[in-house]
Image (cartoon, rainbow, N blue to C red; front, side, top):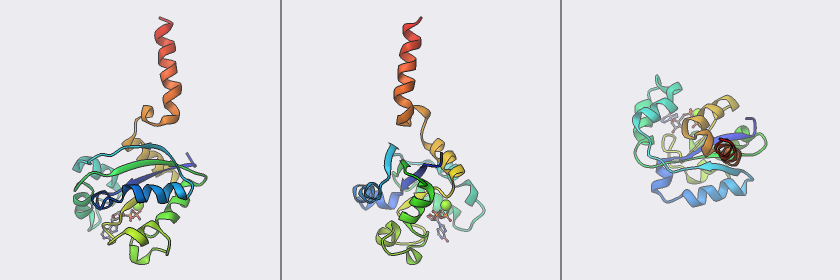
Length: 155
Ligand code: IDP
Ligand code: MG
């Protein structure tokens, strides 16, 4: 899975009507969209996603924020997708993010920072599975659909 990462356009960006602009930044940077949906996270789902941060002082605020409205998880593909996407989004705190990054340009604060990107290939795989079923990952779709028909027609 070295060529895939999970992005989430966070609730602050959705509320500010930035979905289109952010997707344009991502695709202009050469990432291909492999799967995408708009969902409103429950506390359980957001808590599971950010499990590694559950002892951190900002955890409750983070869950509050991530459940405050819909967000847009997206599976992206590119060579070295994880580091390439982290570079495109910039540091967690927009004040520390490089010029030209998505967080530098759009984010208002370290907590409400517009976008998520996986931090390792292992976490990318876990995070993709958090939001998308096999059938929703388009590369599986055609093959699995054909296999289903094949099985049905062979009965
Ligand atoms: P990342 O999103 O750049 O990988 P993480 O350290 O994994 O940053 O933190 C996850 C998310 O938790 C951040 O994107 C941000 O929304 C929030 N967060 C992280 N650190 C802080 C903080 O010090 N104060 C408030 N919110 C934070
Ligand atoms: Mg992180």
